[in-house]
Length: 403
Image (cartoon, rainbow, N blue to C red; front, side):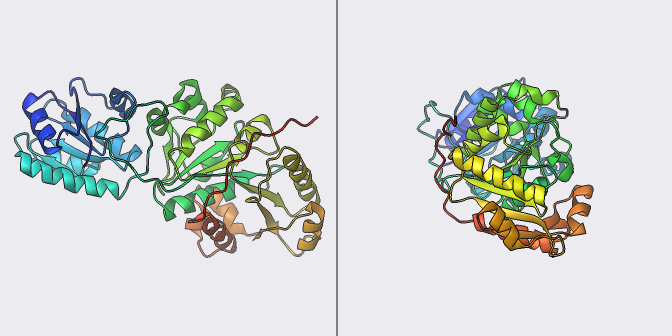
């Protein structure tokens, strides 16, 4: 059974939809009709997202089409149906807005029941599980949604800047999103100089600072509307647009944001700032899979040794960690053996130095899409594959205080 959210002012239409949905329907007014998905869905008052949204265009055609487009972009797992006279113009506008079907206001109940079943089945194929917020009572008509197992929180770390964290984080996140559509969100946690948006060619309408200022980091529906969507389907919490704006984000905000996203996405990928600042440590409290990165030079390798020691002392270095050596070059004066001897652990993956990665970054295109046969792209695909289908490790305990 599909649960339905209907926006209409027509009592007759309300009766038909309720009958076709076997009572699994909530009705809200169509006048006024908000074009913002968060405001529209806020009328659910904490109930889970509907399987199907039915919008009556007879009184609010323009608003219904704009709302449908926003819903399709932010909530692809929700099927959209418009009620109206299906002239050529409405049909074309509905198609562009991601609507699955347009039905007449006087549609028979049996016919509408068939439409709901078809649209609901199509929506299920695109759906990302979105659980009920903690403390919210689940209405009896809400079907149980099977989860895909515990989420993985993957934080990309480096003791120094310029090691290639953003390249690794963005390409890993895009690859995971393409392999499992709707599964992945990427957080740019370099609050002063984050450039994930640049690396992915994005122009965000809202940033991480905007999310926490309005308290949307604890509201699952409002949070999704503040994320920026990449062409791959990846959703991104972009860094603030200035170092000053980043000051509004606290470590507590970071922890709450990660906790919320981990209930909605299979993979949460975090591009951290260089070093082990308070925000990075807050992220590590929730990280299941640290990815530690260094460039192939003496300062970078020694810095990684110190970072590994610090994380070990803080009980934030699980067995699931991976160590990556970037810009690997046999002519650099260091060997892989030298690096491993210095950091006193093995290197899990080496990424060679290639120009393609720099070009892709400058173009705002993920390397795995721009040059999929490049040596670095191939290694990043291997990194991605190591997380797909694997069982997520347990979450770390809170770090201990080191005197």
